[in-house]
Length: 156
Figure (cartoon, rainbow, N blue to C red):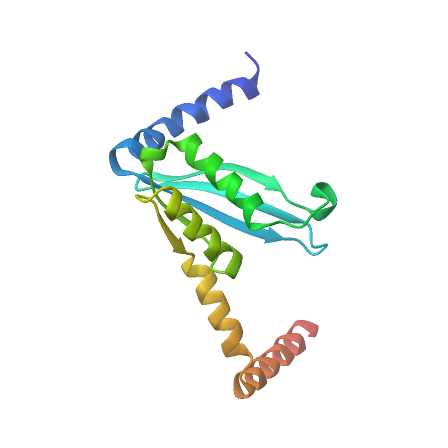
């Protein structure tokens, strides 16, 4: 066997205990979107349980690739697919951003699967709060002074 094929087998063996825990303890599906500097989008799907987190897949959602913007229904289809991949009885919750289209999607999931909860991502909530705090005049002044100080120190 080639080295890559051997590694695939090893990784699958390493993931087996994590996947086995899904039936005993349940798991969470976590969806996260990301934009690069060129505004190319990707959605990452993870499965998390008490034994660890597994990367399930990513979806290239660049407008150039799709030809249409990312809609609630488009992401909903991928969440449903992830739920089916993991096993409906194993999924306890879906964790996604708390922007309006994701809130709508979360309610769609809980209507379709009443035993599955939707929870907003705490990190996303904190990010939004910090951004809002950073807009306060006195905080913005402190940040600006800190940036100038860092720039000064890096030049020397």
